[in-house]
Image (cartoon, helix red, strand yellow):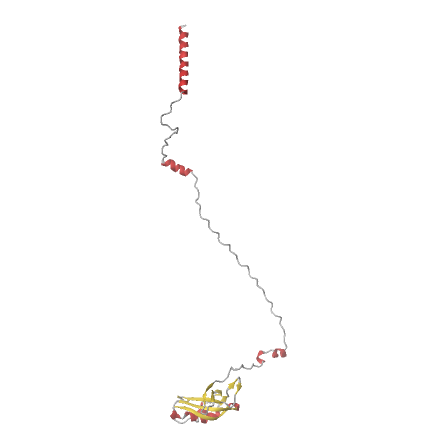
Length: 226
């Protein structure tokens, strides 16, 4: 009986202890004074290693670059079209037709007014208009030297002559001698009958009867006079 009574008492004590523990756990703790109901947690600082690991773990975001404008499209020129012209048909001409088509056989056109006109170069002793002489044939040294005085100096003789048909001159007069003592103008007068001079022209037409001025230069050379 004693053993049963002690076992029963022990079991009862254990049950009481369990009930007491359950009641103690279910009891509410009183809130501290001045508490606002906000829980504050102290978070320890992360180590540098963890930050680096976090940076490495995060995906790398590409930087936004400015949009690059697209270059204008290159337009190549189209290939030029080459047209080949056909040569004109060959026309065979006879000998007479070819002679008629010869450009060299065409008559020369008349000169327009004002072209090729002789220009006045002065006035004669009696007021005659003098034109520059244009040689149809230049005189030779023999023709001039025959009338040249002996021991004459270098210089020139200037005369004025009236034009006649067949490129002849006559009625000549002395205008100037240089030097004066050389009398070279008289030598030119004496040789003038041999001169061949074209008459002055106006509108392309010869003016026979007009006056021309003739100058002969005399220069000594080793073989005589030029």
